[in-house]
Image (cartoon, rainbow, N blue to C red):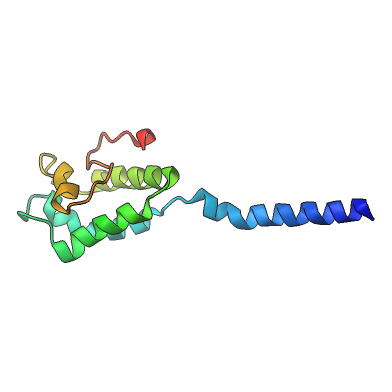
Amino acid sequence: MARSMSLKLARVVVLCLLVDAPLAQGAISCDKVKSYLLPCVGYVRGNNAHPDPPNCCKGIISLNSAAQIRLDRQAACKCIKSLVADISNINYSIAPGLSGQCHVDIPYKISPRIDCKRF
């Protein structure tokens, strides 16, 4: 009887770990990061003096809120690095100041040389 109870308890524990695993893993999707940052493309290309506050800054703030744990920050960083490689004509002298323009302190600098392991 005790062995049967232990086996049932072990199964419940394993089931709980399996159900909780995706939540613990965290990683934000690149599609989500892209949707947050897409409104900022004009700014990083130098087409606008300031980012479009209702859209770009909202995306920066949302990204910062969504990437609170290390795995999410690293995943977001890798996505940013990938996106930067796909966007032409980025002005790298103004792009790193994007978060400052939006009054948000994010650890990611828009650069093709981001070291995502630091985050």
